[in-house]
Length: 276
Ligand SMILES: Nc1ncnc2c1ncn2[C@@H]1O[C@H](COP(=O)(O)OP(=O)(O)OP(=O)(O)O)[C@@H](O)[C@H]1O
Figure 1 (cartoon, rainbow, N blue to C red):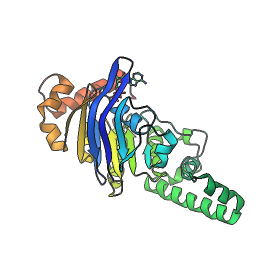
Figure 2: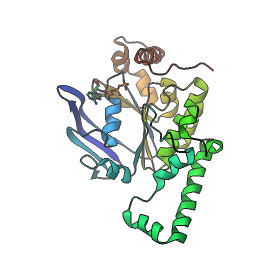
Figure 3: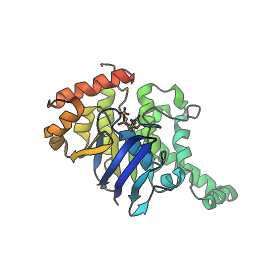
Figure 4: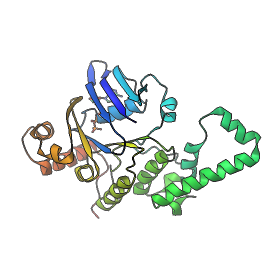
């Protein structure tokens, strides 16, 4: 399984958000996507998930073109995502948030469940058990019957990832999963995400939190002004003066990049990080 971006381009009017990006992603690895604000990171996620159209070039999974597919077809191809700003089904329970993602994609199977109640009950029980297993993994089982919107912020972030996992994705796209989490929550999240590394899954994590990225990711893609500036291991990225220049305009080290990322988050009004 490989996810491939080929000469990918995204243009909003005259603004070129993604400019001729070509790279590929292999299963079993966690990829970090970093870069200054406006570099095009979220646009990559949005195009891969089908939320935004592709202006030019292609995105394919196992040789199958995803660009041009409808959003639900992309989801059915095994791509799941989370959002920079949490988007849960607030009025549903935590358990329902997961169950709703595991309903059959094929109309045929839905009718089978409706017309054959024993089969429907069996499938519903299996969905529930599978959802509970994911909730237990995230330590959310105690919230199963609570309304999703009533959960503390950090738990909602975890629930978003849990919900994406309920789709059993082959490609998991996480857009700033640590935004607004305190240090304790970020450490917990980092450990959970590391456990999700699987030979059957490609993971892409867009994140400003350098500690998370450097700890978690096997490979890092650095975006700058819509272009792929650099790609390598965390050590290679930390050693790259190109990367440091892109972030800071000066040839400083990774600690300054960390500080710059925090400053930019604050400027953007991304929920302040609480020190625990
Ligand atoms: N829906 C949109 N309409 C018009 N321009 C957009 C849209 N979404 C993004 N852009 C522009 O595309 C460029 C890349 O934005 P994108 O959100 O992908 O960057 P980013 O690297 O994810 O930034 P951040 O770290 O701030 O989230 C920016 O110039 C942004 O203003």
